[in-house]
Every structure is written in C-alpha cells, then in structure tokens.
Image (cartoon, rainbow, N blue to C red; front, side, top):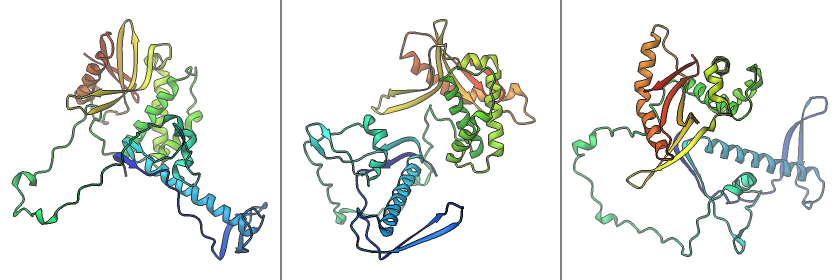
Length: 335
C-alpha cells in the first residue's frame, strides 16, 4: 500500500485523556523467563504514589503511545514521492513556539523535526468554504463518450515505469541505499556482506519483503560485484570532485509547478559533469546481453536526457550520462 503523496495533518493534537478503569492488567516475564500476569483494582491513589495500579496505568500509557508512534511511522512510509506533515502550534512569546504535548504524535518526533520545520503564518483566519447550492446541481443525462475512455497515465521523466515485481523493486531500492551509504565513507579493501546483512533485513522488512533469503542473496551479490569492479569502486570513491549520491534537484516547470528529481550519483571528472543512474535489472536467461543493454538504454534514454538538461542548467560543465548495472556489473554510456 503506497501512494504518491501522503498528508498527515494535526500532529500536535493530543489524544483524549486516559480514563481510570476499574481494573488494569498486563503480562510480563519473570527473572526466570516465566510468563506471569499482574492485575490491580483502582485504589484511588494519587498519581505520584507507588502503587501497582499506578504502575499498570503508566505502562498502558507508554504502550498506547508506542502504538501511536508505530502508526505514524507506517503512515509516513506509505509515501512514494512526498510526505506532508503539518501541525498547529501556539506561541510562547514573540517568535518562540510552545513545544507540543508529549501525548501528541508531533511530541514523539519533536526532537528530530524541530530544526527542519517550515512555518506558515497568517494574520487572518481562513474564510469558511462556500456552501453548495444543491438546487443548482443537475445530473447529466448520459456520460459523454470522451469520459468513458480511461485517462492517459501521467508521465514523469524522473519516474520510469514501475516494475510489476515487488521483489525486484525492493532489491533495487536496497542496492541503491547500500551504494549511497558506501559512497559516504572510505571503501573497504575487502567487503563482507555480513557487515550489512542486518541492515538489509530491516530495509527489506520495511519494504514489505518478509521471505528475505532470495532478496538478501541478490542484494549481497550486487553490492559485492560493484565493490569488486574497478569501475564500481572508482564510481563510489569520495575522491571524485563534487561527488554526491542521491542528489536531489528541483526544477520550476513552465506551468508554475515544481518537479523533483533524485540523481543516483554525480561528480566532475576532467571538467565534465557525470550523471550516473544505477540499475539492478539483469537480462533474461535466454536474452543476449547486447539486446538487453540496447533495450534498457532505449527505455531510460528520456530519463537520462532529462537529467542532462537539468544539470546543464546548474553549471557550465558539459554533461555526460551513463547507466551502471550493479548486478552485472556493466557501465553503459549514453552517447
């Protein structure tokens, strides 16, 4: 379940206060590993008193808060392109904002997002929406012929046709993340896939891949081949001039909208700006390599040409583009 854009509003809203139920209970493990059970009746004690009921009450609040945070994480990770988090905060004094309540969803992530917030201020409250005069609504007698046709799929030069195989898509995503991570530190002389295996497992789990054995093998093989390839190590080296991985660029389109792009790898070599797009695809078992490469180059040519035009607008360097197939490995330049 993924969506191009996800909106999560009102994050500063606090949940309704916890009520004091007549009975509270919880499971726990003893020091000997035995399954045990605690039960307490409301003793009407002050919240500061150390009673069993107050302990269970606090445990329930912590569990519900953890569950709410988990749901926020799940909602946030459903976004494929953009995630919008919004909240309304009160002012303490001047431009200083009051921190959100710890009981709110924003309170759970406040330390991580406080320095990244964008504030929208308005002196006037928004006008209420106009009511619809239903007497002026009418139903069409019949659907126009043009409306019966399925709308054309939206195209975006930054998003190639999505694969129907979720496993292949997840493998490609984890390989991309791994190469970005490796490019930010000195490359190891010898790479042991076990050093990243637990991280790969977590990323695959996040992407919805539960039967991970095959995926882990393919991710490990791709990353190992890249690091064993002279071109791959040269590509990931931090010594490249103005090297950047997962380089985010935005462009204003003629209609006033903004298009966002993410370039896998870019750097300058001999006064030439290189733009490299990683691909984890491989040819079919009966497909000649030459046919596969020609097919992939034609498939991604518009995407690479869009990158080239975009980067040429940023500086005066000539721009060259290439595909790098991580599972082969193979370097394919766009002429």
